[in-house]
Amino acid sequence: MLLAVTLASALVSAASTIGGALPGPLPLFPADNWWNLNISGAPVDPSSAAYLSFIGSTRQLHPDFGGDVSPGSAEVYGFPFVVVDGSLPKRAVQFQYDDESDGVDHTTGVSVPFYPIPDEAITQAHWIESGDPGNVDLRSSADRHMLIVDRDNRYLYELYNVFYNGTQWVAGSGAFFDLNANGRRPDGWTSADAAGLAILPGLVRYDEAFGTGEIRHAFRVTVRATNGYVYPASHRAGSTGGALPMGARLRLKSSRDLSGFTPEVQKIFRAMQVYGLIVADNGSDMYVSGTYDPRWNNGVLNPAFRALSASDFEVITLGYHPVPPTAPTNLRIRTTG
Image 1 (cartoon, rainbow, N blue to C red):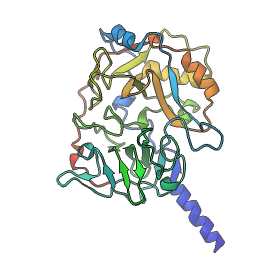
Image 2: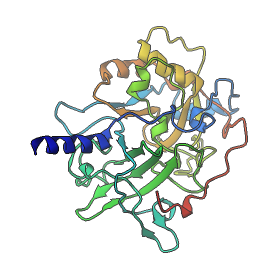
Image 3: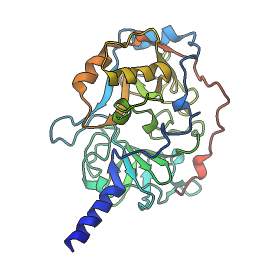
């Protein structure tokens, strides 16, 4: 009997894993997706200098990721992500912005079972951004994103501002992405991110930084204010004159010498030169997003990132894409997973 209980516990653990192995092929999404676009030869936007002046040319880069805030603390730096198998039961989530969320019957406004949220996330730490369990209500003070990958079907589910109220899951918004396709959100729609983009594909991940190959995708970055949106974004969250739009791309200048950094930091910075940073949300200027992982060493990351400033970057042509974008997928009718 003890053996049976132990095996059952192991299966549950294997079914839902914090920071588990992501399903290949990698990087996430097809090779021609906007996150995986090589922009090393893209033209510089005529207003690049003005945009960077708005941010502040001396504004330093910051790694918005890391490990535990303190030993034994529930609070964490960065985005946790959860890998589940395709058999996990789906849960209905009640949304504040249900008209722009997936998992909702938009003819009735009723949420349907759609999101494979592990029950462990209700009471256990580190399943949700900021670290505290889902039954702790921090919606007024933290973004509380939850990122879930169905490894069997290669589906990505992302939720914003989640909370388990004792009866059901509630959230600000939720989005579904098929990792096998380039389904852009309908124009005007948010996702779990203000720009309407997926979050997980734009994170700096430990396994990539310390892996054998190069990092082959862009990173998510925040700025303090934005002005509208451009492709590949689909949603605005500000109209501040002089600010970058959501979806804008910054590229680390190829002339920036990286030889003085550690190998893993060089790899991260080389990806910024080839794939760039995509403006995905309002927040602190030049904060680059990454995963929660206790193996990160912020004693190395923080000074390395501070060695770069906004003046080391350039803004490429707004809305840049070398081929016509994939037609938006009408996710309004997506109510089952």
